[in-house]
Image (cartoon, rainbow, N blue to C red):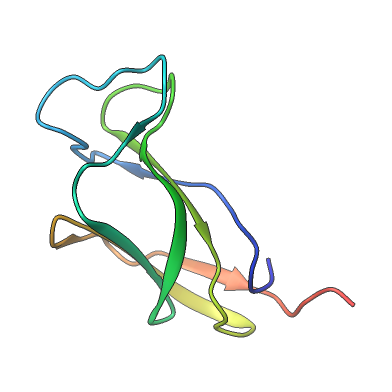
Length: 95
């Protein structure tokens, strides 16, 4: 995926709120959050409970910032707590 592409990712075992989360509609995270790719903050199009997929699974829809081609660490931070740092491959733009 080149810079500017949007994609869907999921976080497991993440507490999105203090109670039950509705699974029949979108439920955005209420905690302050951000997603960092290769040290650059990404635009987050959606961050919240994954619709119809159950409690503890959070869906993040970011747009890849201009980091250039390569393999980059991805870190999600919510309420001041950072995730582990899986990697994503960013390709050159298709010409």
